[in-house]
Length: 129
Image 1: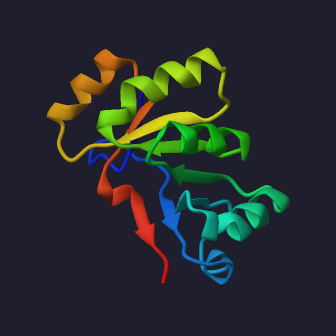
Image 2 (image 1 turned 45 degrees about the vertical axis):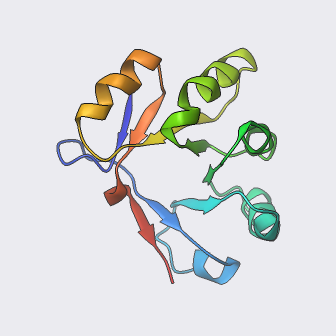
Image 3 (image 1 turned 180 degrees about the vertical axis):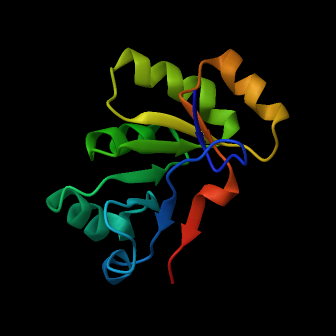
């Protein structure tokens, strides 16, 4: 299981951006975080064109499929979607890892039982204005 933002385990951060200009304010080799939205397609295309790793937060299975097709390295889902998302990712052999937001350590065990690729604590996501 991958851990992002856990106090015991050093990990990379995700940089939440809202436009292409904000990407320039992130450290080199950053992984960009954004929510899947049609309004963000220009940012996604920019990330693809420049071979910048990114994580997309999705709200449903259709967006999950888009995130994989768009080349996301990580796909961030809510816990209620986790089991289904992981099963689909394994069935379709996604390159992306499925990550689930957790707020406390007790949730890690549940995600492990579901076979989820990794967990993200809030501390792993840095908002770039």
